[in-house]
Image 1 (cartoon, rainbow, N blue to C red):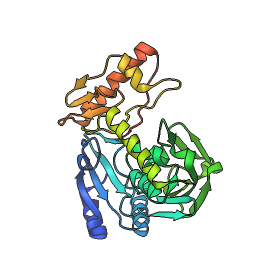
Image 2 (spheres, rainbow, N blue to C red):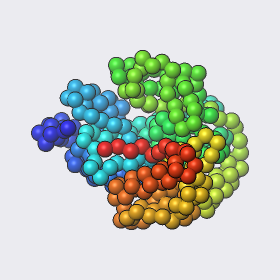
Image 3 (spheres, rainbow, N blue to C red):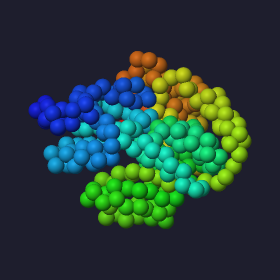
Image 4 (cartoon, helix red, strand yellow):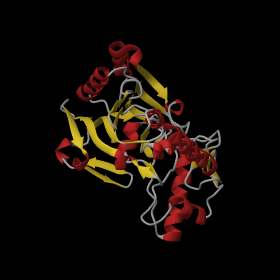
Length: 305
């Protein structure tokens, strides 16, 4: 647990880079969650590495975050440091038919960059919120494709401080999951950048396709209310949303948390939800779906605290 004294030391050491006792409801798309002991926004890769080293040296638990769109922080908050990548790993570069995107780049910005450069292959990700790093970590995708389909290589930072490039064949990629074959890397591997392969295409055609994708998203998803996107992973051979709907949960609510009438795999915040409301509703869904269909739904949203 981080002490007040260590928070004072952090403020003296890092200044405006860190905030103490920061409400995570300000930084997650669900608009819920307790406070993080420390919320850090490094402005450079060197600053990021310094923060991580400091946490390891002083026994401070830390986690890496992007846009907060796939994150549910419990009402009890997070005892440690949450480090946000959006200000330090935010570059996009075209390299021939490849796009190199750093982990803190918004996924939507990657898609727009591809369109602007007349490069085909990333439009599927227009429906994916958050940042490139988080999208890679969970092999995020839609019905039209997943990040792993286009990912050619990763640049990662190992716990030793060494940077390595991992090719596609060095990765284990499956539904909503990505890991590295070299298990000696351990858990403390940070994705710095992804390189995505694409093909040449007409920018106007890509723009029209993008409009159609976004229109379908607005028609089928509850974009008016705070959510974390699809709350549960699809089980093998089935749709989580369909199972939740068949279990009778559309429109059901606990406190300010509600299962969307538009898409049953979305839990929305009607304006007054707590993290406890959302977790209670999610647990009720899991229990009912398991009882009715003998399927245990696994959260797609990362739950911390």
